[in-house]
Structures are given as structure tokens and as C-alpha cells.
Image (tube, rainbow, N blue to C red; front, side):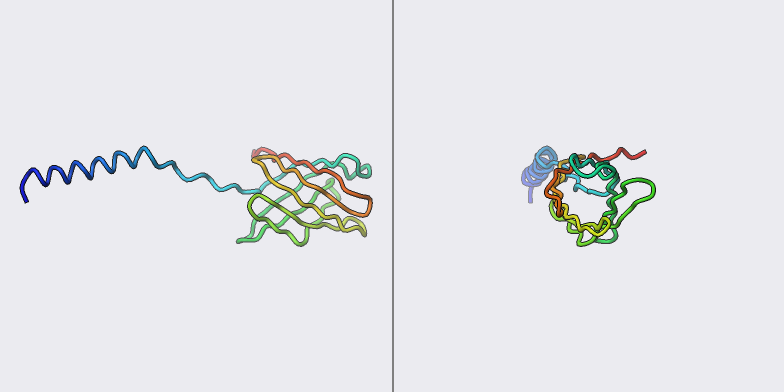
Length: 129
């Protein structure tokens, strides 16, 4: 090999490295629903309209708890989280309540249904202190 061939090879390699450094974006951060979410459900019985939805992750599974006030907290069952969609059920008194919705950044919008009908649930993620 001569000096000219080596120079071309080095130049080509440097050009590839330079171009690739401009064309690749850093990978997008994967969304996580974990956190405390302040929710509201207009139209349901008084005392049940607002609260906190607490989402945690253990391994690959997610857990959801609904906290209506300092005295009433219930753990969700049948929790499924997939591609920004979350569904679960909770028992309040003797009533099973089904919740199914979608995350969009720090906002969660869902449909809630039980024997009294269907209602809209919205939740906003509480900032981490």
C-alpha cells in the first residue's frame, strides 16, 4: 500500500464518523407512568370525585392504588399497562369500578364505568419534590 491509499482510507473513515455524528439522534426516553397522579371524576357521588392515583412498578409489573382521602386507599386489580394505555379495576364498597385510559405526557385521560354509568376521569402527574 502506498501513502495515497492509506490517506484516502483514513479520510473516508473520518468522513463516515463525522457524518454519523450529525445524523443519529439520541434515543427517546421511554415514558414511565410511575408516580402520583391527582385525578378528578366529575359527576360521581360526593366524596369520590377527586383523589390520588399512585402508580408503582415492581419488576415488569405495575401496581395502582387509588387514594380518595387519608382514610381510604384501595389497591387496583387486573392492572395492565401497554404502550401508554392503562386499565385496571378497583372495588369501592361493594362496587367494581373499571378504568381504562391513555397517558399523554403528564396527563392521563380515561373512562370509568360502574353500575351508575360511565364517567370521564382525568389525572395530572404531581411534580416530584
